[in-house]
Amino acid sequence: MYDVLIIGSGAAGLTLALSLPNSMKVAVLSKHELTEGSTFYAQGGISAVLDETDSVESHIQDTLDAGAGLCREDTVRFVVESGPEAIRWLDDIGVPFTREQTEDGTSQLHLTKEGGHSHRRIAHAADASGRAIETTLLDVAKSKNNIDLLEHHIAIDFITTRRLGLKENHCLGAYVLDKKNCKIKTFSAKHSVIASGGSSKVYLYTSNPDGSSGDGIAMGWRAGCRVANMEFMQFHPTCLYHPHAKSSLITEAVRGEGGKLRLPDGTRFMPDYDPRAELAPRDIVARAIDNEMKKRGIDSVFLDISHKPKDFIVEHFPNVYENCLQFGYDMAKEPVPVVPAAHYTCGGIMTDLDGRTDVDNLYCIGEASFTGLHGANRMASNSLLECIVFGHAVSKDIIKRAEEQSNKSTSPITHIPIPDWDESRVTDSDERVVINHNWDEVRRFMWDYVGIVRTTKRLERAHNRMRLLLSEIDEYYSNFRVTGDLIELRNLAIVADLIIQSALQRHESRGLHYTLDYPKSDPSLANVDSILDPIRVS
Image 1 (tube, rainbow, N blue to C red):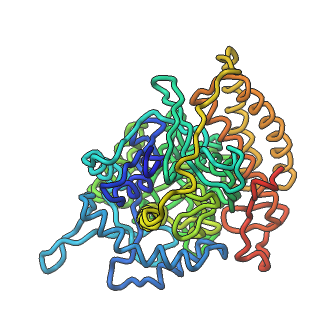
Image 2 (image 1 turned 180 degrees about the vertical axis):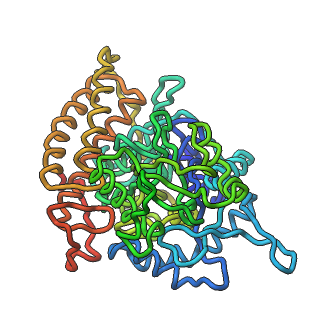
């Protein structure tokens, strides 16, 4: 029995684990290596109001503007006001942020600027901020005796009282596949937390690592949680275009420091789309690139910062520079070919400001959650901030609820017997080709039909195909012993279906959801979220 079971070992999950008291027994699960999540690969940094020329109100307004009328202002204010404290906490535990000398000889955090921000407010560690944050959090977590860090453990489903035949819906823990030992374990826990990241792997081209298959969102939805705004999938405008450059993101900070987007003939095009040009929010930049590529029949556009001195480029973007060099491109001498790729899931499991979901004792934080912070389009570098702020918020709520429970004589759920995982009526599969084929098909038609630009006809075509695939996958899942690939395929297909259904609900274009059938935003749909209830979803 654990006090807290955390599904995911990124910034959100580790922040929560480190914020809980040493008296609580905590399990942190990672389905691959502990670092193999989106946090580790984040480049830009983490936003907060840290400069005297900046203000909380300015950060709030920038976030609301980027969110295109769908941000929840109370959430935005809560996160932005908590930002400076979150940065100080990371700084205190040893995250090696990039610093600069002031005129009086003291050192302060170097701040950069990214798309949608009106001020420099991005604290960063060169161009590998996520790696610096993730490795620091892990180092501290490994020193804690109360935290068990378990690699190669992939959660299958949450155990809930409703599934055990009771009326109320409480989470009791989860069934988990230990991939190395091919054994399914039962993890019972007083509190369970989804911190598993997003679902961009649902698309054929993505900046995310292979594990971003929407596991937590699908698990939470199956357990009885509502999901919201899944149609808003963010495509990062600038991923390196090369057949072997898998998930090679080129940080938005390159544009923040003067990088220009150009056509093959060297012409700039972003000023024709938005007065903010290259520093417009990501949905605008990604759509502009997509339009130019389709209109001109070109494979990519080009990101050019070669007008800056080489020393400047290498100092500010050492990892991006070296990565591009490996594929034959010298950023200091020439433009680099880039294309958009699926990058961030703005919707997810609905929570309140304490991270609570619709299922009692089940929380959700980070990219898997829907808090209302991002609205219809996430502003750059607000995501890591959300992870830290809500990691701390959930820890406070768990501590409070544990104290309340300790004052009661008994808990209504701690003595409920949990059955072991039943494999008595399944066999090992001899048709792995089914998993591989379905996995590939989902990602391809999501890219073709539910991508940057959509139509109702494309969405309906994707929905019809998704119905058949879900039926095939469900039959396969019912008859064969589970594997990591099968678990991910099942989750990926459910999340794809949620994205499609959410997109079909929204009869307008707003933020990241752009449809040719409804090219304008509908003012009556401002502040109206696309909510899917698992009880009503077909």
